Image 1 (spheres, rainbow, N blue to C red):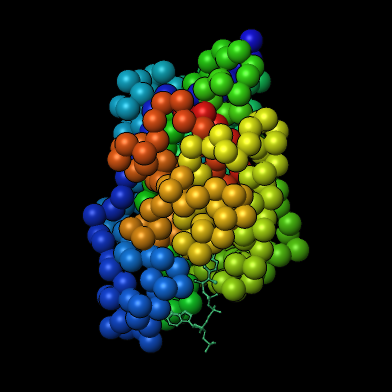
Image 2 (cartoon, rainbow, N blue to C red):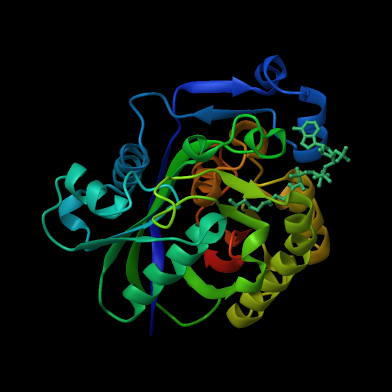
Length: 323
Ligand code: ACO
Protein backbone atom coordinates (compact mmCIF):
# COMPACT_ATOMS: atom_id res chain seq x y z
CA UNK A 1 0.00 0.00 0.00
CA UNK A 2 1.14 3.56 -0.76
CA UNK A 3 -0.18 6.68 0.95
CA UNK A 4 -1.41 9.19 -1.66
CA UNK A 5 -2.59 12.81 -1.37
CA UNK A 6 -6.00 12.60 -3.04
CA UNK A 7 -8.22 15.53 -4.16
CA UNK A 8 -11.41 15.54 -2.03
CA UNK A 9 -12.74 18.95 -3.11
CA UNK A 10 -12.08 22.00 -5.26
CA UNK A 11 -13.40 25.57 -5.26
CA UNK A 12 -12.62 29.11 -6.32
CA UNK A 13 -13.46 32.76 -5.85
CA UNK A 14 -13.32 35.57 -8.40
CA UNK A 15 -13.89 39.23 -7.49
CA UNK A 16 -17.03 40.77 -8.98
CA UNK A 17 -15.20 43.51 -10.91
CA UNK A 18 -14.62 42.32 -14.50
CA UNK A 19 -12.38 44.46 -16.72
CA UNK A 20 -12.45 43.92 -20.50
CA UNK A 21 -9.31 44.63 -22.59
CA UNK A 22 -10.99 47.64 -24.19
CA UNK A 23 -11.03 49.46 -20.83
CA UNK A 24 -7.24 49.87 -21.04
CA UNK A 25 -7.53 51.70 -24.36
CA UNK A 26 -8.74 54.83 -22.50
CA UNK A 27 -5.50 55.25 -20.50
CA UNK A 28 -2.79 53.34 -22.40
CA UNK A 29 -1.39 53.07 -25.93
CA UNK A 30 -2.76 49.54 -26.33
CA UNK A 31 -5.67 47.70 -27.94
CA UNK A 32 -7.97 44.75 -27.37
CA UNK A 33 -6.53 43.30 -30.58
CA UNK A 34 -2.88 43.49 -29.34
CA UNK A 35 -3.67 41.96 -25.95
CA UNK A 36 -5.72 39.10 -27.48
CA UNK A 37 -3.19 38.33 -30.19
CA UNK A 38 -0.10 38.41 -27.93
CA UNK A 39 -1.53 36.83 -24.78
CA UNK A 40 -4.96 35.29 -25.45
CA UNK A 41 -6.39 37.41 -22.62
CA UNK A 42 -9.85 38.98 -23.16
CA UNK A 43 -10.81 40.05 -19.64
CA UNK A 44 -9.73 39.69 -16.03
CA UNK A 45 -11.19 40.18 -12.55
CA UNK A 46 -9.79 42.84 -10.23
CA UNK A 47 -10.26 42.94 -6.46
CA UNK A 48 -12.90 45.36 -5.18
CA UNK A 49 -12.45 47.35 -1.96
CA UNK A 50 -13.85 44.35 -0.08
CA UNK A 51 -11.39 41.80 -1.50
CA UNK A 52 -7.97 40.96 -0.07
CA UNK A 53 -5.74 37.99 -0.80
CA UNK A 54 -6.77 36.39 2.52
CA UNK A 55 -10.50 37.08 2.03
CA UNK A 56 -10.46 35.59 -1.48
CA UNK A 57 -8.39 32.63 -0.25
CA UNK A 58 -10.91 32.03 2.53
CA UNK A 59 -13.84 32.09 0.09
CA UNK A 60 -12.06 29.61 -2.19
CA UNK A 61 -11.22 27.36 0.79
CA UNK A 62 -14.85 27.42 1.97
CA UNK A 63 -16.02 26.48 -1.51
CA UNK A 64 -13.51 23.57 -1.66
CA UNK A 65 -14.54 22.39 1.83
CA UNK A 66 -18.20 22.42 0.76
CA UNK A 67 -17.31 20.41 -2.35
CA UNK A 68 -15.46 17.91 -0.13
CA UNK A 69 -18.33 17.67 2.36
CA UNK A 70 -15.89 18.62 5.13
CA UNK A 71 -15.55 21.44 7.66
CA UNK A 72 -12.53 23.35 9.04
CA UNK A 73 -12.52 20.95 12.03
CA UNK A 74 -11.52 18.14 9.63
CA UNK A 75 -8.41 19.97 8.35
CA UNK A 76 -4.89 19.65 9.79
CA UNK A 77 -3.02 22.28 7.74
CA UNK A 78 -3.38 25.17 5.30
CA UNK A 79 -0.72 25.78 2.64
CA UNK A 80 -1.28 29.05 0.78
CA UNK A 81 0.67 29.98 -2.35
CA UNK A 82 0.88 33.74 -2.79
CA UNK A 83 3.27 36.59 -3.60
CA UNK A 84 0.71 39.21 -2.56
CA UNK A 85 -0.06 38.45 1.09
CA UNK A 86 -2.11 41.17 2.82
CA UNK A 87 0.86 42.12 5.04
CA UNK A 88 4.61 41.35 5.08
CA UNK A 89 3.74 39.10 8.01
CA UNK A 90 1.92 37.21 9.45
CA UNK A 91 1.27 34.80 6.62
CA UNK A 92 -1.99 35.11 4.71
CA UNK A 93 -2.47 31.43 5.57
CA UNK A 94 -2.82 32.21 9.29
CA UNK A 95 -5.41 34.90 8.40
CA UNK A 96 -7.34 32.27 6.45
CA UNK A 97 -7.05 29.88 9.40
CA UNK A 98 -8.63 32.53 11.65
CA UNK A 99 -11.33 33.45 9.10
CA UNK A 100 -12.29 29.78 8.79
CA UNK A 101 -12.63 29.61 12.59
CA UNK A 102 -9.85 27.01 12.79
CA UNK A 103 -8.00 27.10 16.14
CA UNK A 104 -6.01 23.89 15.71
CA UNK A 105 -3.41 22.67 13.18
CA UNK A 106 -0.94 24.90 11.33
CA UNK A 107 -0.85 27.27 8.37
CA UNK A 108 1.90 28.82 6.26
CA UNK A 109 2.51 30.62 2.95
CA UNK A 110 4.61 29.42 0.02
CA UNK A 111 6.20 32.10 -2.18
CA UNK A 112 7.25 30.90 -5.63
CA UNK A 113 5.34 33.52 -7.66
CA UNK A 114 3.49 31.94 -10.63
CA UNK A 115 4.94 28.51 -9.77
CA UNK A 116 3.57 28.90 -6.23
CA UNK A 117 0.65 26.49 -6.54
CA UNK A 118 2.82 23.69 -7.90
CA UNK A 119 5.26 24.28 -5.01
CA UNK A 120 2.36 24.33 -2.52
CA UNK A 121 0.95 21.07 -3.92
CA UNK A 122 4.36 19.40 -3.64
CA UNK A 123 4.73 20.61 -0.03
CA UNK A 124 1.22 19.50 0.92
CA UNK A 125 1.91 16.12 -0.69
CA UNK A 126 5.09 15.78 1.40
CA UNK A 127 3.18 16.65 4.61
CA UNK A 128 0.58 13.98 3.82
CA UNK A 129 2.83 11.14 2.69
CA UNK A 130 5.17 11.73 5.67
CA UNK A 131 2.21 11.45 8.06
CA UNK A 132 2.44 15.04 9.39
CA UNK A 133 -1.08 15.91 8.21
CA UNK A 134 -4.04 13.87 7.00
CA UNK A 135 -6.05 16.62 5.33
CA UNK A 136 -4.57 19.82 3.89
CA UNK A 137 -6.22 22.79 2.18
CA UNK A 138 -3.93 23.98 -0.62
CA UNK A 139 -4.77 27.46 -1.86
CA UNK A 140 -3.46 29.79 -4.57
CA UNK A 141 -4.59 33.40 -4.04
CA UNK A 142 -3.31 36.67 -5.49
CA UNK A 143 -4.09 40.37 -5.68
CA UNK A 144 -1.66 41.35 -8.45
CA UNK A 145 -3.73 44.48 -9.15
CA UNK A 146 -2.05 45.92 -6.01
CA UNK A 147 1.46 45.59 -7.55
CA UNK A 148 0.68 46.83 -11.08
CA UNK A 149 2.28 49.93 -12.54
CA UNK A 150 -0.82 51.21 -14.37
CA UNK A 151 1.38 53.28 -16.71
CA UNK A 152 3.29 50.18 -17.95
CA UNK A 153 1.35 48.63 -20.85
CA UNK A 154 3.85 45.74 -21.03
CA UNK A 155 2.63 44.33 -17.70
CA UNK A 156 -0.63 45.82 -16.38
CA UNK A 157 -2.84 44.34 -19.13
CA UNK A 158 -1.66 40.80 -18.38
CA UNK A 159 -2.57 40.12 -14.76
CA UNK A 160 -5.73 39.50 -12.73
CA UNK A 161 -6.90 38.66 -9.20
CA UNK A 162 -8.59 35.60 -7.72
CA UNK A 163 -8.21 32.44 -5.67
CA UNK A 164 -8.62 28.69 -6.02
CA UNK A 165 -8.30 25.84 -3.53
CA UNK A 166 -8.07 22.07 -3.26
CA UNK A 167 -8.74 19.87 -0.24
CA UNK A 168 -6.22 17.01 -0.22
CA UNK A 169 -6.67 13.89 1.91
CA UNK A 170 -4.28 11.01 2.62
CA UNK A 171 -5.70 7.75 1.26
CA UNK A 172 -4.09 4.35 0.77
CA UNK A 173 -3.47 3.37 -2.85
CA UNK A 174 -2.12 0.21 -4.44
CA UNK A 175 1.11 1.94 -5.46
CA UNK A 176 0.27 1.84 -9.18
CA UNK A 177 -0.44 4.58 -11.73
CA UNK A 178 -4.14 3.75 -11.36
CA UNK A 179 -4.10 5.22 -7.85
CA UNK A 180 -6.01 8.43 -7.26
CA UNK A 181 -3.94 11.31 -5.90
CA UNK A 182 -0.55 12.90 -6.52
CA UNK A 183 1.67 10.45 -8.40
CA UNK A 184 4.81 12.59 -8.83
CA UNK A 185 6.20 16.11 -8.43
CA UNK A 186 9.15 18.05 -9.89
CA UNK A 187 10.39 21.43 -8.62
CA UNK A 188 13.15 23.68 -10.03
CA UNK A 189 14.52 27.20 -9.64
CA UNK A 190 17.42 29.21 -11.04
CA UNK A 191 18.10 32.48 -9.24
CA UNK A 192 20.44 33.71 -11.98
CA UNK A 193 17.29 34.78 -13.85
CA UNK A 194 15.70 36.69 -10.95
CA UNK A 195 15.96 40.05 -12.77
CA UNK A 196 13.62 38.91 -15.57
CA UNK A 197 10.59 39.16 -13.31
CA UNK A 198 10.51 40.87 -9.92
CA UNK A 199 8.77 43.46 -7.74
CA UNK A 200 10.87 46.57 -7.12
CA UNK A 201 9.76 46.98 -3.50
CA UNK A 202 9.93 45.21 -0.16
CA UNK A 203 11.55 45.64 3.25
CA UNK A 204 14.73 47.00 1.63
CA UNK A 205 12.82 49.93 0.05
CA UNK A 206 10.01 50.52 2.53
CA UNK A 207 7.43 50.25 -0.27
CA UNK A 208 5.43 47.32 -1.60
CA UNK A 209 6.66 48.16 -5.14
CA UNK A 210 5.51 47.30 -8.66
CA UNK A 211 5.93 44.25 -10.87
CA UNK A 212 8.69 44.54 -13.49
CA UNK A 213 9.00 41.95 -16.26
CA UNK A 214 11.07 41.35 -19.35
CA UNK A 215 8.18 39.40 -20.86
CA UNK A 216 9.87 38.26 -24.04
CA UNK A 217 12.87 36.94 -22.02
CA UNK A 218 10.57 35.00 -19.69
CA UNK A 219 8.77 33.68 -22.77
CA UNK A 220 12.05 32.28 -24.13
CA UNK A 221 12.55 30.18 -20.99
CA UNK A 222 8.92 29.17 -20.57
CA UNK A 223 8.05 26.54 -23.20
CA UNK A 224 11.29 24.58 -22.91
CA UNK A 225 11.38 24.54 -19.09
CA UNK A 226 7.65 23.75 -18.77
CA UNK A 227 7.77 20.84 -21.21
CA UNK A 228 10.95 19.50 -19.52
CA UNK A 229 9.53 19.63 -15.98
CA UNK A 230 6.26 18.03 -17.12
CA UNK A 231 8.21 15.24 -18.81
CA UNK A 232 10.32 14.67 -15.68
CA UNK A 233 7.22 14.47 -13.47
CA UNK A 234 5.49 12.11 -15.93
CA UNK A 235 8.55 9.87 -16.06
CA UNK A 236 8.68 9.78 -12.23
CA UNK A 237 4.98 8.92 -12.16
CA UNK A 238 5.45 6.21 -14.80
CA UNK A 239 2.90 7.64 -17.23
CA UNK A 240 3.12 8.62 -20.90
CA UNK A 241 1.68 11.55 -22.86
CA UNK A 242 -1.03 9.41 -24.49
CA UNK A 243 -2.41 8.49 -21.04
CA UNK A 244 -2.88 12.15 -20.02
CA UNK A 245 -6.50 13.32 -19.92
CA UNK A 246 -5.82 16.99 -19.10
CA UNK A 247 -2.95 19.40 -18.94
CA UNK A 248 -3.88 22.12 -16.44
CA UNK A 249 -1.17 24.72 -17.13
CA UNK A 250 -0.36 27.99 -15.43
CA UNK A 251 -2.45 30.51 -17.37
CA UNK A 252 0.05 33.24 -18.36
CA UNK A 253 -0.20 33.35 -22.13
CA UNK A 254 -2.07 31.20 -24.67
CA UNK A 255 1.02 31.03 -26.88
CA UNK A 256 3.07 29.51 -24.02
CA UNK A 257 0.21 27.09 -23.25
CA UNK A 258 -0.02 26.01 -26.92
CA UNK A 259 3.75 25.75 -27.36
CA UNK A 260 4.15 23.60 -24.24
CA UNK A 261 1.30 21.24 -25.18
CA UNK A 262 2.78 20.86 -28.67
CA UNK A 263 6.24 20.09 -27.28
CA UNK A 264 4.65 17.49 -24.98
CA UNK A 265 2.83 15.94 -27.97
CA UNK A 266 -0.61 16.58 -26.46
CA UNK A 267 -3.49 18.22 -28.38
CA UNK A 268 -5.15 21.48 -27.27
CA UNK A 269 -8.42 19.53 -26.86
CA UNK A 270 -6.79 18.09 -23.72
CA UNK A 271 -5.79 21.43 -22.19
CA UNK A 272 -7.91 23.35 -19.67
CA UNK A 273 -7.74 27.02 -20.76
CA UNK A 274 -9.06 29.92 -18.69
CA UNK A 275 -6.52 32.64 -19.57
CA UNK A 276 -9.09 34.42 -21.78
CA UNK A 277 -11.36 35.07 -18.76
CA UNK A 278 -8.91 35.39 -15.85
CA UNK A 279 -5.65 36.76 -17.28
CA UNK A 280 -2.53 35.73 -15.38
CA UNK A 281 -3.53 35.27 -11.73
CA UNK A 282 -0.07 33.95 -10.78
CA UNK A 283 -0.31 31.27 -8.05
CA UNK A 284 -4.12 31.29 -8.27
CA UNK A 285 -4.29 30.36 -11.94
CA UNK A 286 -3.93 26.57 -11.68
CA UNK A 287 -6.48 25.94 -8.89
CA UNK A 288 -8.83 28.40 -10.62
CA UNK A 289 -8.48 26.42 -13.85
CA UNK A 290 -8.95 23.12 -11.98
CA UNK A 291 -12.12 24.42 -10.33
CA UNK A 292 -13.55 25.80 -13.59
CA UNK A 293 -12.55 22.60 -15.45
CA UNK A 294 -14.22 20.46 -12.81
CA UNK A 295 -17.42 22.54 -12.70
CA UNK A 296 -17.82 22.68 -16.50
CA UNK A 297 -17.55 18.88 -16.69
CA UNK A 298 -14.10 18.64 -18.31
CA UNK A 299 -12.25 17.04 -15.36
CA UNK A 300 -13.85 13.78 -14.24
CA UNK A 301 -13.09 11.35 -11.39
CA UNK A 302 -10.14 9.16 -12.36
CA UNK A 303 -8.75 11.57 -14.98
CA UNK A 304 -4.95 11.85 -15.23
CA UNK A 305 -3.81 15.49 -14.93
CA UNK A 306 -0.46 17.13 -15.56
CA UNK A 307 -0.07 20.61 -14.15
CA UNK A 308 2.93 22.87 -14.85
CA UNK A 309 3.96 26.46 -14.07
CA UNK A 310 6.85 28.94 -14.34
CA UNK A 311 7.30 32.32 -12.71
CA UNK A 312 9.59 34.79 -11.00
CA UNK A 313 12.83 33.40 -9.64
CA UNK A 314 12.81 31.81 -12.11
CA UNK A 315 10.92 29.01 -10.38
CA UNK A 316 9.10 26.23 -12.20
CA UNK A 317 7.69 22.78 -11.68
CA UNK A 318 5.08 20.16 -12.43
CA UNK A 319 2.73 17.79 -10.61
CA UNK A 320 1.12 14.64 -12.03
CA UNK A 321 -2.08 13.57 -10.29
CA UNK A 322 -5.07 11.35 -10.85
CA UNK A 323 -8.29 13.17 -9.88
N1 ACO B 1 -0.08 47.05 -26.12
C1 ACO B 1 0.53 47.36 -27.28
N2 ACO B 1 1.85 47.15 -27.48
C2 ACO B 1 2.55 46.59 -26.49
C3 ACO B 1 1.95 46.24 -25.24
C4 ACO B 1 0.58 46.49 -25.09
N3 ACO B 1 -0.09 46.19 -23.95
N4 ACO B 1 2.90 45.70 -24.46
C5 ACO B 1 4.05 45.70 -25.16
N5 ACO B 1 3.84 46.24 -26.37
C6 ACO B 1 4.82 46.45 -27.45
C7 ACO B 1 6.22 46.51 -26.92
O1 ACO B 1 6.53 47.81 -26.43
C8 ACO B 1 7.01 46.17 -28.16
O2 ACO B 1 7.10 47.31 -28.98
P1 ACO B 1 8.50 47.72 -29.67
O3 ACO B 1 8.81 46.56 -30.58
O4 ACO B 1 8.15 48.99 -30.37
O5 ACO B 1 9.47 47.86 -28.55
C9 ACO B 1 6.13 45.15 -28.88
O6 ACO B 1 4.81 45.33 -28.31
C10 ACO B 1 6.56 43.71 -28.70
O7 ACO B 1 6.82 43.47 -27.31
P2 ACO B 1 7.30 42.06 -26.78
O8 ACO B 1 7.49 42.16 -25.29
O9 ACO B 1 8.46 41.58 -27.60
O10 ACO B 1 6.00 41.18 -27.11
P3 ACO B 1 5.76 39.63 -26.93
O11 ACO B 1 5.27 39.05 -28.19
O12 ACO B 1 6.92 38.96 -26.26
O13 ACO B 1 4.51 39.57 -25.91
C11 ACO B 1 4.14 39.19 -23.56
C12 ACO B 1 4.63 40.16 -24.63
C13 ACO B 1 2.64 38.98 -23.72
C14 ACO B 1 4.44 39.80 -22.18
C15 ACO B 1 4.85 37.83 -23.68
O14 ACO B 1 6.24 38.05 -23.81
C16 ACO B 1 4.64 36.92 -22.48
O15 ACO B 1 3.57 36.42 -22.23
N6 ACO B 1 5.70 36.61 -21.74
C17 ACO B 1 5.68 35.66 -20.65
C18 ACO B 1 4.99 36.17 -19.45
C19 ACO B 1 5.04 35.09 -18.40
O16 ACO B 1 4.79 33.92 -18.66
N7 ACO B 1 5.43 35.44 -17.18
C20 ACO B 1 5.71 34.40 -16.20
C21 ACO B 1 4.65 34.23 -15.26
S1 ACO B 1 4.25 35.69 -14.45
C22 ACO B 1 4.86 35.65 -12.83
O17 ACO B 1 5.62 34.81 -12.39
C23 ACO B 1 4.41 36.76 -11.95
